Amino acid sequence: MKPLYSVLLVDDELLSRTHLKLLVKWEDHGCTLAGEAANGREALQFLEEGKVDIVISDILMPEMDGVALSGEINRRYSDIPIIMLSNYDDFELVRGALKNGAVDYLLKHRLNASVLLETLDRAKAQVNEARGKLRDSGQIRPRADQLHALREKFVVQLLSGYVKAEEVEEHLRLLQMRLDAKHVLPVVMEIDGFHEIVASRGLKEESILQFAITNIVEEILLEYDKGIISHVGNGKFILLLSFANTKSMAYIDQVIQGIIDRSSVCLKKFVKVSASFAIGKPCFSILEVGKSYEQAVEALREKFYLGKSSVVRGGAAKFNASPMLSLDPNDELRLIASVKSLSRDDVSEILECIFSKLKGNMVSPVNAKMVFSELISAINRLCKEYHLDMADLYDQNEVPHEVLVRLETLNEIQSWIRAVFDRLLTMLARKRNENLSLFIQQAVHYVNHHYCEDISLSDVAGAIAISNNYLSSQFKEEMGIALTEYMSDLRVNKAKLLLAEGKLDLKEVARQCGFNSYTYFLQVFKRKTGLTPKEFLRHDA
Image: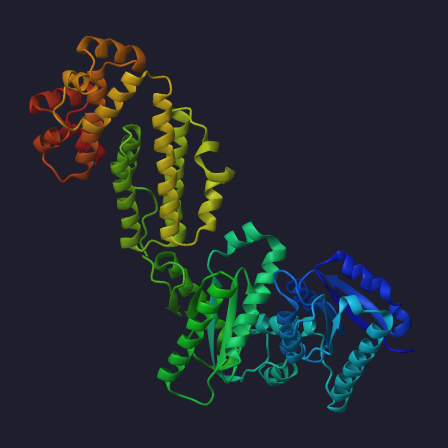
């Protein structure tokens, strides 16, 4: 029985693929259709997953065209011939395809059964020649997808400590890995924002992205003596580099930095992602890379503070052994009071203080996220208290705690939380104003911005050009509280914040909160809180 040659059809036009399938009786000519792809990226994914002997591809396609596809096939699967098709008689396209090893370049409008079969015969001859060379050399070439999977499996076993010393050299040879068994250094590469990429692009796009990243870094490693890249899961890749012929750490560092720099630039340029790197400790034997890899992964946790595109050295992450496990009660009190008084500047300042404490103490990411959860809980309590719809607070029905898991760096989380508080303040201000007359809206706005000054009801009435009596009665009717009491509430809340900070004496606190009399300040504070300022400080402590 004649051998069957599996053929992959690649064309973005369904009608063109259908025409090709019906043009000849494939099995009568020793061929079987392995599958179809709509562009070069899909074709490469198919080549990874299934057995293909010959590729027939259109040249102009979205995402990855035929010239780029032929280049990838020539580099990765040099024994797979490719036949190019096009509607255009364009010399530049022809030259690019033939340069990449295409068997022939056929014009679709001149294509018929005899032309296709004659070209297929030449492609099959190339396949037979490649198979003969493999037989003569005593080698059996694993399918491309098998070889790729076997390499990844070997690397995982290597990192897990399941490879025996006597098996290493044979595995490296059979899997055609450009790597020595001694003087190996691992570098961990983690794609920044990987979970967000998966959430937005989907699993199929993730697979294509993983494939593209591997190809890009492989191209870079080919320029160096010995080195491989392997995907290890969850957006992490490992680069294993051999330095058997040098003992100069300065040279090794230079090479590694060059690989990292070039990889970073190419990943941003071609696949629009950034990556962080952790350089492991050099290993005399490849069997020791597992421990070095684990140390590098641990060190990579410092990305939480360093930010995306960071580069760290392997070792224990430098987090505080005695972390702050919860939100400071004083900070929480001040924050809630500032939200209720609609003071954006104070809210921003308090959030900055909270995040500065985390940075200063180098709290571990796990414990830091406990603080973030408490901030979210405070936001949710305020929403319930003021009957605000939380669906309007979070973007696109996002779940806050899932967002905290997805975001990887402190700066990202800080920006997100600040944005949520900004929306909360906007919603709260709108809620308070939605049933107010224009005059009272103006009065509230004026008081909120000037209550720390020595202002009275007359000053407010003058600012919005209405009488004292009308303002007093209308404010009480619409707000449910006298204007003077409203100002007193704002001033006492501000006083609580200043007292909690502990930087000012009581008289200065009174002055900065708009009280023109220290005695009156003490009276109002006691009436509003049930405590004197000194008692409040002792109670707060």
